[in-house]
Figure 1 (cartoon, rainbow, N blue to C red):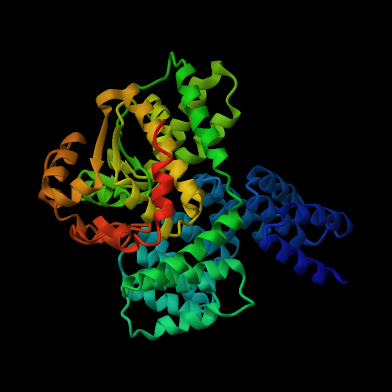
Figure 2 (cartoon, one colour):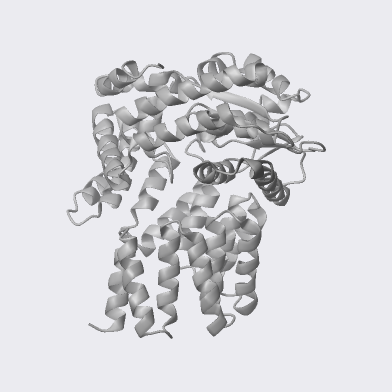
Amino acid sequence: MNLEEKFNILVNKMNFGHYDEVIFETNYLIKKFPKQEALYNLLALTYQAKGEYDKSIELLNDALKKSKNNTNFLNNIGLGYYKQKNYIKAEHYFNEVLKHNPRFINTINNLASLYNEINNSNECEKLYIKALSINDNVLETNYNYASFLQTLGRYSEAEKYYNRTLEINKDFTRAHKSLAMLKKYKKDDKYISLLEEKIKNKNLHKSNVKDLSFALGKIYEDIGEYKKSFEHIKIANDIKKQLSKFDIKSEIELFEKIQKFHENIKIKNFPTNGDKKKIIFILGMPRTGTSLVEQIISSHSEVYGAGELPFLEQYFRKYLNNFGDQQNIDKDLAKFKRNYLAIIEKMTKSDVITDKAPLNFRWIGLIKIIFPNAIIIHCKRDPLENSWSIYKNDFEGGMLFSNDFQDIAYYYNIYQNLMNFWKNAFKREIYDISYEDLINNSEGKIREIINFCRLDWQDACLEYYNNKRSIKTVSFNQARKPIYRDSLKGAVKYKNYIQDLENALSSSKVR
């Protein structure tokens, strides 16, 4: 077997998650073929896939010493920093690549994704258009541009580029799933039979079946065939649960660690003076109206809607796992605060910002230490409606508890326990907004929300659906519509199929 064949086998192994095997075999091949640059890139990307970004960056920096200004190495260093959410360093390396090769499409796409993530929509779109002008036959460019257009509510354009993606690769099932979410289907739509035919293919990988099943689950709900809808949604979730190997015990342990940390923590000299930014954290369980609430608040002229920022999750989880030296806690948290604000500064000069990552409810204690003036808005919803909505949607990355009824029920239980803990600690500093109340008494509740945010009233907050900002969540469509009541009783349509979920919620009540 020649080197090219071995390399292709290793790429396939990496794509299927056999990271340790790829790392071992690639290191062996690098010793035999030290001048083969592709091996260094494969090893670096495997480290990144495993979450070992520092190892990836260190490896490529060493490789750069032998191959100065190698654009693949520079690009993948940038990618490592990008995945660490170190946007300043990532942007630097991507721009270094484009100095040497302005037509390097991989880097153009990576930099576009970075700008999309920090809500620089103008620069993001310019880069996608540039990439398409160089080569309009690249799947990644077409798919990512379609996803970008979708976040801006430009649905007909998004549909065009999703379809172009499928012209390039008719078996790229993620595009099918995205198309299914883009609009409401009717019974006679030929697209349904096309997807049903595709899913019968016995050679499909499980991840492809998952995509098509979520797509069909949504479409059958559109046309009122709830039994078929549930069957496909269950198939998709069973596959995700199997692939993720998720164990709810890890989340239970994390929540216990969070509570113990805050019961024992002592912060004496944390610097809080001179905070200019007012940060509004919109949080709660997923699918409780967080996107809608952010759309409402960010319709105010003084507010910048930053969306679901990943930094608290990434930093605080790592911080809790490595926490040991009580003496350095003030310095560590102060450094994180500076980094967080530096990224915000790249996004906007506004002094009022929303951060709407739902699972930030886990970090309320640390948020209030770092940003004592932070405004906390806690979104909640009927437990069954909330849990069913979580189960039937496909979340990109994270949310691994969402694929099993029992996991969802356990997670809901520990979420309620932790929220009770925070409310005891912070009393009136957390504003609860019920999704049902927001729908049934929209103007009254919207006025309450704006008042709690210490903002002057603006009528634009009632007309939030005219807000053209980017929405990158599964609620991208609903949050652009006026208040409607159809979502209040979504679980009722599936009452014959979700008794196990209802029972799991009943047996997992707050202790």
